Length: 186
Image (cartoon, rainbow, N blue to C red):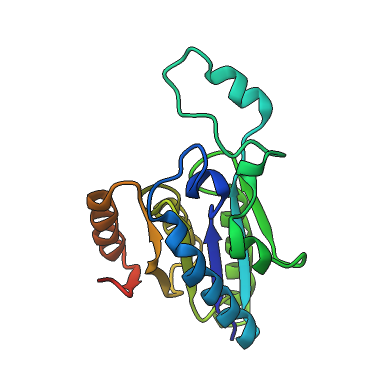
């Protein structure tokens, strides 16, 4: 049975762009290595992209709303560095306008239903890496847990981070409380 790796929002704007933060670039090597590990075993890799449109950026002007980021078609929307080089055209990509991906949930739920009809699980495990731990990684870990309730869900602490170290640690605690296995935690 295959394992699934979900790479969450490891995009230029979250690493060194509009919402980038010191240390995010350090995840490039570990995430790329993790992708290679999954590929070497013949496992599945999905990519999530935080995705906004030009009109989203226009609506932010003069309002107390988030910074314009990950605008489709801009360099900030692209995957960062070696992670971008690791994506292949056959990898499923899910574009999402907010924290959690509805399309990811639908895909996982469908795979869960099919697996149940065969008396199995859709994946041996589902692992999440990427940014930002306390926002999109958390949201999509909950989605994976909801869609595939009996599949082990894993978050690699060495492959995720936040702009706030305290929030990152608290998020890892919350994930463990949601029956997500947090590995490589310092």
